[in-house]
Length: 548
Image 1 (cartoon, rainbow, N blue to C red):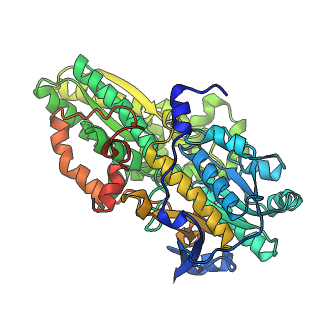
Image 2: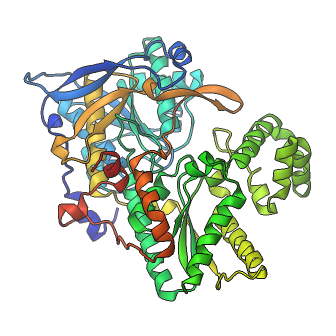
Image 3: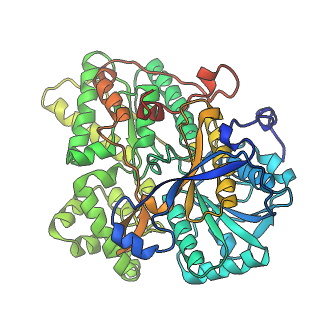
């Protein structure tokens, strides 16, 4: 692999780690846990892994010699900056347990376990990928580990390779599946531990013990750099409104963090739209009002940040999408037989009255996007819905209506953008490089302590790294029951933007000023070398949540 000058320099970077992870560690049990909701149902489904205690690692005074252990690792789901450092931390951790320990990577995600597609990860391979972005060391995939037949097929190769522990690096669904796998292997005494690591740039996998999911910091810095560039262009040309859609299907954490970093004129927060029961028309009117107000001050330009999942948070649209999900789950085969030109009318004829009327009122392109193939969970693929184009067009139409009524709205011209893949494989920030390495090393400590059904946890990360607290939390603690493919299933509860939380309150206190003034911030690219206050800062979201 040919390396850039930055990669060569970054390869020498030594991630900072909690002081407890330097040398021998011991696991200290904390309070026993229960699931965040639906306790009885979750307990019945996970009798072997429910209610376990929170674990914290502390320095051990005793030197313990442990036998060599073979460990497997899987990257699951979408890429997030820092995944390679999780694997590097895990590798160094299992080698610290015993120099003869071995690490195997399953190729292209969970499917590699089922298909027995793997490679041994040696020091030479690991060293090539330290502090780099992407998941290309072993690749990733979206195969769902849900069926007993898959678990049994995976167990065949685990036994053949003598693997006693499996680490699954993924988001909420991947870690849910990791917990199901841990429960199954425990129930049959398979002798295989399963540990999860919290990954998702969307930032919706977090709680008191999981302060942030890895990759969120880097992705937000990448997006904020480009938003800053656009805002500088916007402020230079002074003739365009830029509608910028950002990753974040189930929560608006990325949009909120980028707003805090760049001070756009408008940022829509999906959770607020839902809480206030706003319609699509309400959202359009809000944006159009800001455009008109800035036009009155002679500013025919601005920026609007839009979370990817906005459409699903508009209550009326949410009801429509829920009915569409259920209907298409049950009638997928029949729907695919309908001619494309007749699909719209077919759907309209099958929905309940209110949803049918709303569906019929949507522009044809958006209506079609709502019936495209579902994701593996049976949900609308919201990234395919061009919300940024929809809003730009609707705002333009609304302003034209207001102009006819005699209101001054200035000159409106729009540009649209979607920032998604640009942030998923960036070279990790110092924060993510450190955090991910610590998560991987902590996973090795959970393995050495004989734990299963746990997620690696590193917290107090707004302090210097030596004061970070490493440990683990039972995955069942984060679960509730949700409808998937028309059935109730146990899943990790997604963490949404809290409207009474410090990050949103900070944004809400500034947005009226940002709407009218051109108070743009241009963060620039991620800084890897230089003063700590420039290079090692966590997200504004995390700092505000921690009262910093």
